[in-house]
Amino acid sequence: MRLFITGVAGFVGRHLLESWGPGAEFHGADHAPLDGTPDAAALRERLASFRPLDVTDAGAVAAAVREIHPDAVVHLAAQSSGAASLLHPVETYRVNALGTLHLLEAVRQGAPEATILSVGSADAYGSGTTGALIREDAPLRPRNPYGLSKAAQDALGALYSETYGLRVIRTRTFSHTGPGQRPQFALAAFAEQIARVDAGVQPPEIKVGTLEAVREYGHVRDVVAAYRSLVERGEPGEAYNVCTGEGHRLRDLLDRLLSLAGVTARVVSDPSRVRTHDVDHVVGDRSKITARTEWAPRLSLERTLTDLYQDARARVRRETGH
Image (cartoon, rainbow, N blue to C red; front, side, top):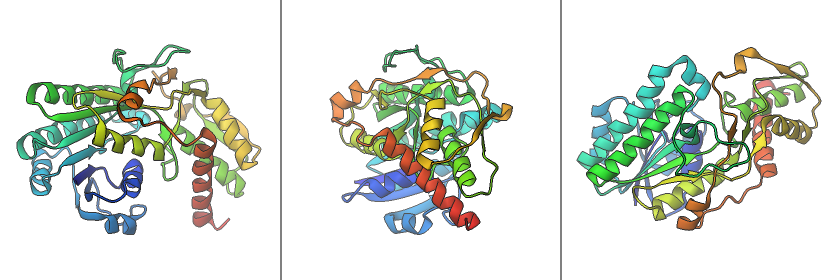
């Protein structure tokens, strides 16, 4: 199988490439050169080819697909931050929605037999109902520009499947974390601050936004295993939740990280970290993906938090010498 991964140098892309295993020839693209990205040497070793690629450039996307002529595409390239989308709604839509349109059209013209895994987000659902699991037949009611761009991406995937017969499989991926995630995301930000407190380079306080929201947090390694299972066994034209089905209040997750690290710190509300129109309860039903592919998350929440914190602690030690 010749596999083309957009966004290959990002958080999820690196884990996907590392975990896929033998039997595939990997071609990758990202918006910036590999030099200076984490694990650049390991990425180069795994990739048969790499190219800088701006997915908002339709001609460049078309040329990449023609040249690679992939058997499958995993489309990860995205502006992935809800907080950043509030500051940059136009750019978020251009990258996430128009970038997906360019990719779908490039595959339609240049590799119409390829399977396309279009990686979306549960933010497209907006907020669910307290105590209930969100199923794939729930309406899409996004509450921020990021969620809107992902709802558009989802709709484009369905359109190209129904109208042009492309083998598009859509995910609605719920929150996930793990080693290498940037601290602009909530749990990774908690872990980074706790590690800096532990190293003695930050006062014993953790700055936070809203802590009452209930979300689930899968391990990124489970998530990329789900993506491989969908490429290999997913039903074209369908959308699948990638999720754990277990919700947790952010405040409780912060407390567990502090306990895990053995750190005592004050929790301080930071208005700059509070997102307007944020979701209150986002927990998914994974029965559809499990029934189709037999995928289920394997790594516990405790393992997820441990791996996240240990990675943050190691990074702080490298940066500060403490």
